[in-house]
Image (cartoon, rainbow, N blue to C red; front, side, top):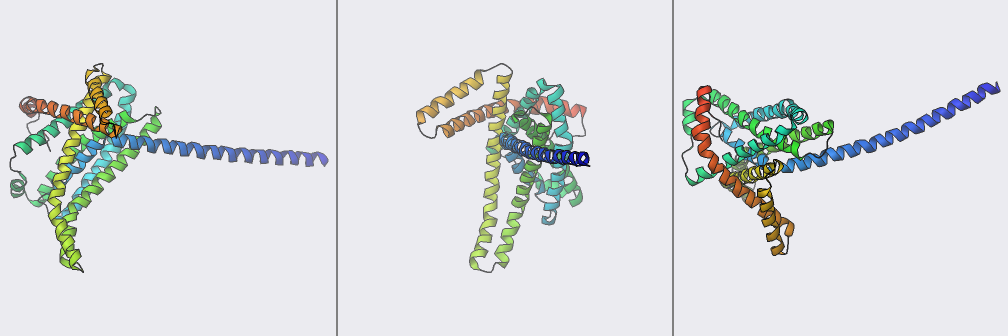
Length: 338
């Protein structure tokens, strides 16, 4: 009997020890989980910041796809584009980016630079259109197509444009992730994809409906102040959209130029990066105050100038060489542009 009691005491001690160990393991797991979550969020924030220029451009580009369509269809159209964007980022581009980084890592920088060239081209083309404006084709397009067909055409065009911008966002984000673990990289890219898509299309939805909200306030506002505020909202929207377009174009040129400069450095040509860094450092030292901001501003400005010059060089190459060749092989398709 005493032997049985001793055995039970030993079992109880073992159970108690095991429970203690389980508690310790759970505590450590919680710490690790918290650390991993913090790492994922931190890397996602850094990656999102790196892709900021493309994100701004994405938000600035999308509202044009609902121009000329019934107000009741604006939000459904934006949801269609956003849903496709989620799918492209999470199902197509995320696995493709990880596979590329695993099996063909040397190809990431050239692809990133190719995307940078695309941003420079698009930004320079917008600047060229501002300098030499031409009438928009939305009105004629609306006359030639019925509403359903027009909506379908617009959505397809928006999804194609979004795919290119999404690919650039995912590639930039992958290059900015510091973690080497594939699982962590996948989680970071997933967070970036979901967060950026929700941010962009949430902002777009607000932008395209602000004039409707302003109009409604101007009509049913309880006070003269509210009605006046609504009228001012409607009047302010064109200015806001112009400002967003300018910021988006500037960001495209800055990010595109920055990608090219860093890509050239990775490939072994250090002169552009070292030159820009040296100029920015000297100007920041001369400024004396806010050195960090001054250095960033000078760097971004020089990157943007480089991006604009490169984009202007690319415009005739793309329009007179690449597009004609593309149209030969794909005569049924038109080259995509914003």
